[in-house]
Image (tube, rainbow, N blue to C red; front, side):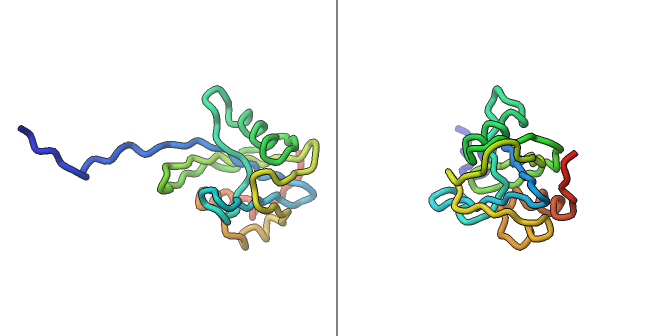
Length: 145
């Protein structure tokens, strides 16, 4: 009977494809703090969420922003795609610059939102998957094309 090796094989990590919106308005970017009772509580992120199987990244971003912030955005340029291995799985995050089209962002899932200049964004404690986008956006001038 072959010996069974306990602990040598690991189950494949769960892959979670998500999108984030760097919503720009008047030269500032909307930053959202994750609420208590959620994973990564207290960390800052770009609002967004999971891409459903039937959606493109842009469709998911429109839906998530309407659900989370009760407003509508125009999805503009892709900033980057980054990945981070969390304890619950690997998050693959694609971040887009977005522009507010309709409504005022309101809190439904986040603890706090702030409008910051790109230069000031690195002062917050960002979720690890968002940090590459923060680095890139902090060097940008966010003007509408």
